[in-house]
Length: 127
Image (cartoon, rainbow, N blue to C red):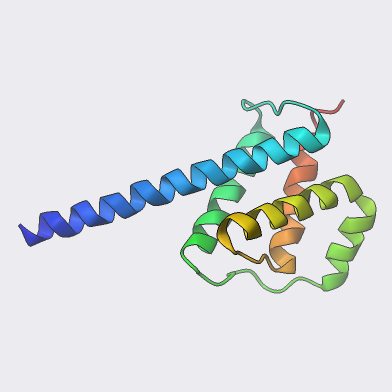
């Protein structure tokens, strides 16, 4: 009996976590589509890769896990800000959104990868 209660509680946590992540991803996609004034192709490879990246990031943040990546050179994010300004600005809006919704702060590595994926998922659709 106890085993079933523990599993049920665990399932409830997973369902709640999945719902939170789904809602956050929906908000992030809305921000990107608004900023770029486009509808993302949900069938594209880059969209799937972007969603996978977001899920991994959000699960890690939700579970309060440390970033497993090596620290990138901070100048890379500075380069991204100059080279991919629109993607960088959009990432900053997403960072603000995540902070206001969940109280999370993203480190420069997370921002770098977010900018990279935003650029990839949008640049192939603007053409």
